[in-house]
Image (tube, rainbow, N blue to C red):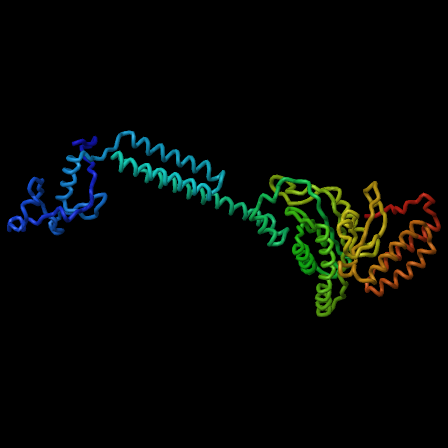
Length: 472
């Protein structure tokens, strides 16, 4: 009989067959047909469980020991011994190594889903090959260990990828939770590829918001009270910006700097910026009512909070900026500087919101009027500036369309230096403002002051209507 290096034989076991058993008692009693045993090999043994000769085989859990001998004799007669050549260990090792390397290389490249499909194909192919060698060639090849090892590698790599992705999402959430709305943070966490760290050029809308006369207001509070006051009005203003898909850049005392169209794309960033500005104004109504009530209870004077807002659109560089130890997600560019300058001009022109021409081009459905052609401080070129007085519903009112048309004609006469005509039109414009319930009479007071100065010192026949600002 062929044996392995340890002197063992590997019979091809068959399943238990009761038909091959004949009771010894029946033989001794003479009740067995002699034809059943004539010319056969007879093995005498026991099959009772209590006699402790029950064995296990690869195909049977409980088999009388005498039938194990029968299987060995059957293997000798039929030459059906199994064999395991020495090179099988090497083949199993190479299968384990190859399948493991495939998992290590492909899981990060093509992802867990497609790698699982590949693993099932490898496992099915290896199992099929193992069965074929066993059934047809009587060779023992164990693919089970290789597949279990490969499955362990796959599970570990998949978990590591999941853990890394969760860590990345957590980092994104942590980095942007203080700048953006929770909904946008979740979108960014689900698809971090939308975020390009380190700086990129984007067309963006910038917003600067500052409280008017905050120095006088701050004198009414101590340090703790002033901190609470700032939080009370910055919170609703911030909520408005975040709800309109904006990103908070920073707080500078009582000033807010925000922007749109980064890090996530926003096709309507100009409109969202302007509507945010209008909603910020509305949100201050409730804040002022609350502060007035608190002032009455504490017995101190109340100064209503009023804000000025500047918006501008242009190409900027946005990204993580700072040092290796500390950085902020911020934005740089000429458009940023101009937005800051426009916020400063809101007080000069007696309006709450001032926007640049590039912003105005995409929000002409809102209630807007042109303010001036101005060269702000720090700029060498004049820019046309506008004010947003209301949303699209206000813009559709006949009272406003009449007023906007009248205001546009007023500017034409103003730039033609027809001062008397302008004064007549200012009277009508102020009446129309009152009918609309708006409060920007200071704009026409500014025109009156300029006309007085121009009458004393005429700008000249070639004047292009540009006003050179001397303050920020």
